[in-house]
Length: 248
Image 1 (spheres, rainbow, N blue to C red):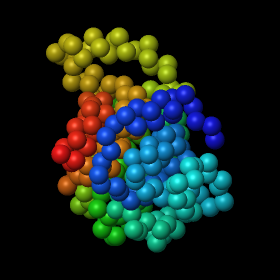
Image 2 (image 1 turned 60 degrees about the vertical axis):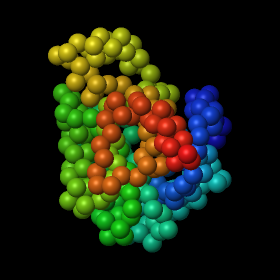
Image 3 (image 1 turned 90 degrees about the horizontal axis):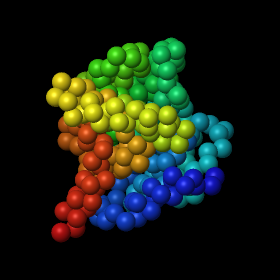
Image 4 (image 1 turned 135 degrees about the vertical axis):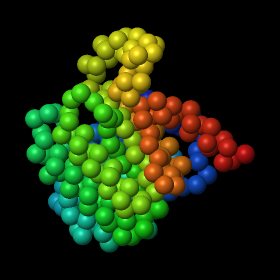
């Protein structure tokens, strides 16, 4: 699959960043999706080993350096034996193009996949669990938010060391129409009575979210760490600072 201009731009940006001296072994679900397809090449470029779970029989178009394993994200027993020796688990499975009309799908896919991943990681004692959640509270997408909050509760109940990312809307290829709202957001972020909400429900770019996931991989959490929109936006700077600190 040919790399897009956006993919190439992000890869060049990552090449300019100092690398972490510690590589991770990452097990990833949702590797063929919108985020997974962008994240895997960046993790490989950073020197991490990536094992991606795909559905049985699917012809995943993943980089050759990525180890591809077959299983069902809705049934942890189908991939339990494939996780080790990974120390980091990234849960990206979710219904594509979320909308209020997909409440049943959220519970059938997002919730089940999240529950299975959390359960098996707790049983295996995986060092670091990374979960893509969503910003909340919010005035819309209540069923989607409810599922993600339920998974966050399960992470707490299972005492996982975890990084939970809470973006609201991700700007990128095929998801560009909210760019017209950026001036409105900027004004709201400046006003004291709208600042907190505007930041919590702010827009992030695909590049920012991918770099935030990379930062989570390279700086494992102890306990549960929450990354909201402001933290996601600052991931590139944090990556550079952390890599320099570790090599100093």
